[in-house]
Image 1 (cartoon, helix red, strand yellow):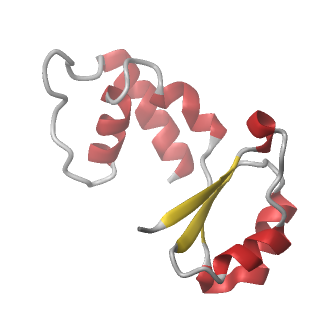
Image 2 (cartoon, helix red, strand yellow):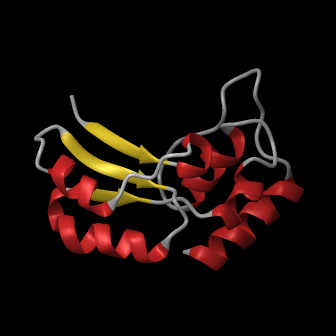
Length: 113
C-alpha cells in the first residue's frame, strides 16, 4: 500500500529532515510527503535530494478560509468542479455552495491557479 509521509512539525513537535526523507524515499511503498513545515528551503532540499523518488504535496494556507467557508466538502467539491474535475453536486443533506461563497472560492482560485 502506498504511503505518504506527513510532516506537520507545528502539530507534532518533530520535523522530518530532508536527509530522512531521502532515506525513506528508498522504501518502495513510500511515494510522497505532505510537507507542511512552512520552510521553503527545506522543501527545495527535499526536492533536490529525492528527485522523482518522492512526490511533494503542499497546501496553500491562503486557500484555507475559502475552502472551509461552509461545511466540508461543499467548498472543496465546488472548487474541484471549477477546476474542470467533474465531482458533481453535494449529496443531501448537503446543498450547493452559496453564491457569496462561490465568489470567495472563485477569487482564491483565480489568484492561485
